[in-house]
Length: 235
Image 1: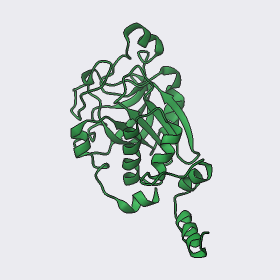
Image 2: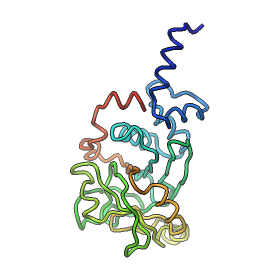
Image 3: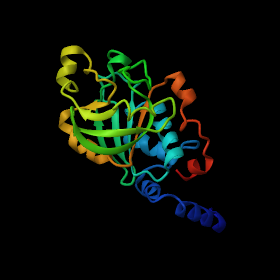
Image 4: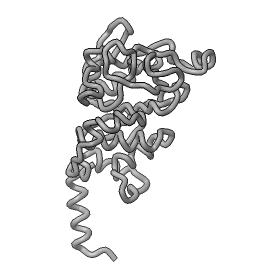
């Protein structure tokens, strides 16, 4: 039997959650396990193919940066480029919008990305949390600018022209021929067929989180080490 004061406490706690978190609870089939944040639980339900650490750290970073974010893209560079490793989530509607192939930089590795940097002209991918900016037409067609939010980890992304764009070397045919995707100059490139809808779904003040179990990144990431307990409790 649940006592009235416990019911009242639950109602108060539920009413203070962000609107999309409340919507998540309304649509979720199960409650989060003990020690799992609602956002992490939500991401796991929508993208069970992603590695657990990638989703947990994406949730942790977003909890710290913006508990009221509407949309989030997660890139899991711990997976090879021959597998889908990018997921775009609508957090308010509790929907998975895209599950896609995504390339990494030439300097990061062959089929698997193993080296990352924030250095101009390295042609390596960067990790961590990014805020999306405006879309534009450039040398790679329709593209999306990214603002790196993490000092020393990805804060030179704009200077490096690290953007999301479409590329013909991101395709199942390319994988069949080479065993992997083609590689960019550090940009997370996607299939040309999804360039427009994917970019439009996350442009302008949404978030992208790129993950790898890189020890330097895990130690230096601002948003994995912020200890923002108040925001974590609300997410």
